Image (cartoon, rainbow, N blue to C red; front, top):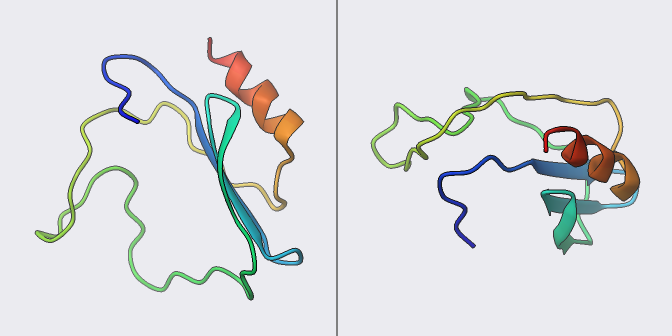
Amino acid sequence: MAYLNSWHHYAATYDAAKGVAALYVDGGLRKVVTGLTGAIEHTDDLYMMFSSHPSQVALPGVIDDARIYSKALDEDEINALAKRIY
């Protein structure tokens, strides 16, 4: 689903203990993946919506606020954060 010319809140969670990853858009749950194992490891540079690598597609836009938490937020916590920007 394309969201053009307006602000939106995106949140992704990963609970390693439960093996569940989830994606939320504007506070609503959009996708859940289960059966995952282990920690998420990233040993390369981390790019958020921009890239200097020719094979990666850059997305136009601005990141207003980026956060990383030490736990997977629940749906109520994500919904509260999403409502704060509108």
